[in-house]
Length: 253
Image (tube, rainbow, N blue to C red; front, side, top):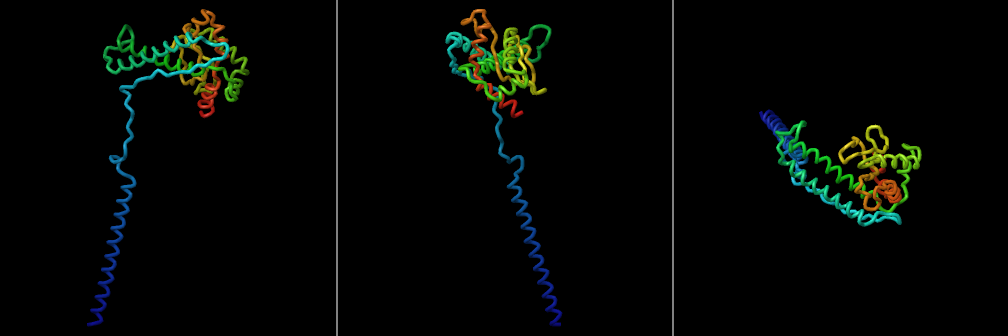
């Protein structure tokens, strides 16, 4: 009888020990699950990154320090041109504000509507401001054409002389702008003619060099002699800026 009792106590002890081990395993698994929840929190507890509000976006007039060589534009020519650019930026803000409350129920493409007028003016002032900024950036003290720029010009035009001939011919034919642009679709570099800020604008292109051919860009200094204006402009292209654009858009695309 004593032997049976001892056996019973031994078996009970083993079972109790197994129960304790089981409880410890369960607690450890729950602890691991809890820890994983703190490492990967639920979506409701993830830190949010606020998206900047665009409702009250204000575009700023940028400052440009344009220092030219011996043959240059006058301070009067540059100063009046900058004032025109500032006007486009201000109108861009005005139109952007008006569009936020414009009546969208009366728009039509047959006759006048406020919404249609604002949408047309939106692209006109937007492009005008940006194109002037790109133009002011790439003129100034004439620098030596960079290696990357020269390489892509020779590749797509055959020679720098051929590129210049094509650029000048396009500039003499344009009423508004000339854009030497990189095409994202076929990977070509071409000179494009724009008759207005928002006309003939090629899609999927990145401007590398921008030339303003509107009369206001040269009339004070050159009258109606656009060829002389373009000759002085060529001698004052900031090729360092063009080189930066070439490396950023062509060699990284």
